Length: 193
Image (tube, rainbow, N blue to C red):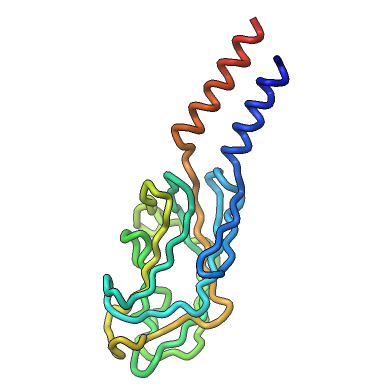
């Protein structure tokens, strides 16, 4: 009977710390280590375009499963941005979960394969913005949009190869996982008596 309670506890621990490898549009994403406050996920955004104003159906939206009840506390980036025509680099914006706008370029001019690096993790609360609370479905949506549309319907900017963003945060245990941990503890405690 001791082995059954150990198996239940081991299975519960495995569920709570699963390390998924995710894929979105054939772009690999790894979330490591899962379930901890210092978890990180690196996302390759090479080739993603900024097409139109916020909320337009022409915009590209990257949707990635980061875990139920996830909270994003920091963002880092190393991006290579090219604007098209008269579009400025500072017009390209990434909107995280409808909550935080990230404009990586401050250039009020066209740019060609210009590198922008955060030089480390930007803690959201230290930057004066709240943490990103991911919707209950666990999907983080990132919309790529333009603040001023220069090339209607054809795109104003895009990320060159080797462009990545890294998100940091944690996943709160779901009620089901907490219940399993509690039941395993009760069972093993009862068996000792």
